[in-house]
Structure formats: structure tokens, C-alpha cells
Length: 171
Image 1 (cartoon, helix red, strand yellow):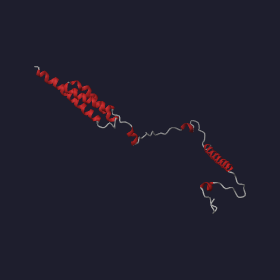
Image 2: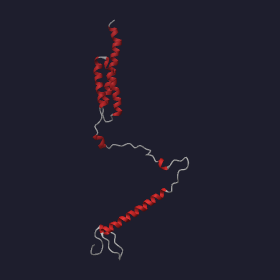
Image 3: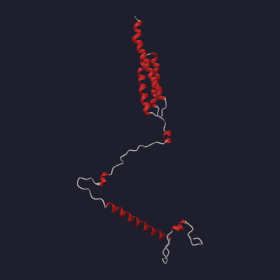
Image 4: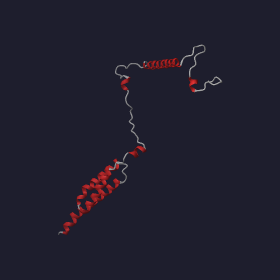
């Protein structure tokens, strides 16, 4: 305590003072009294909580009990990744790379023979799937799509050459 009679510290201000004329309690006794008071407040609150439960009526015939109607939340909220979390995950590029490889091989095969069509078709399909699935793959799927379409176009030109021009050449 200061010279003015006011408490100096917060602990001194918060410490309960016994009524005038009552014997001073030790710290242990004061803590025990405070614990009893806290327990009494908690019991009083529990009594109030129990009292509010008594206000509900029991279910009538054909009605469900209240406890059986409690369900999970009705809306599903997806987890939204932060920018930092997205940057820590490696970008998926497998389909885009496969599309680009198939497309380039389809173009190379389409230059020499018609058999590049399956590779070119695979490149187009993989590119269209990669466009939806691999958002962060960049423009790699575009390379697969363009080269796949070029391979299909070359195969169509080979088909025209083989079916139209070669028979006329051998006549």
C-alpha cells in the first residue's frame, strides 16, 4: 500500500478485504473461500441450465424427440486454399506434358505416314482434359492441342494423297 492508503498493485486492488471487525484471513483461506464462491456460482448456473430444459414438453404421439432432430450443418463449405498454400504445392502438369509429347510425335509421324492419327487424337483428348484438370499447367496443353490438330490435318492430307492421287498416277 502507498502512503495515501491506496493499493499500489493490481493484485492488491483485486484482493478482497474482509469486513470491518472480522479476523484477517490467510492467503490459503482466502483462496479456499474464493473457490467455494466460484463453485456456488457454477452450481447456480447449472441449476438455471437444468431449469431451461424443463420448459420443453415431451413429444406428442407421432412427433420426433428433439434430440433426434439435431443434424449436421446443412451447407457444405469447401476449404479455400490461401495463395501461400497454392504456391507450396507443385503444379500438376502430367496430362499437359503427355498431350504435348503425343502431339509432337503425331506431327512427326504425320509428315511421313498416315499412322500418326492415333497419337494426334490422343494429344487432342489429353489437351482438352488437361485444360480443365490442370489449371496451373500454363500453355503446355495448348501445344498438345495445336500439334494434335496439325497431326490430324496431315493425316487427312495423306488420306487424300493415297486415295485420290496415287491411283491416277499408276494408270
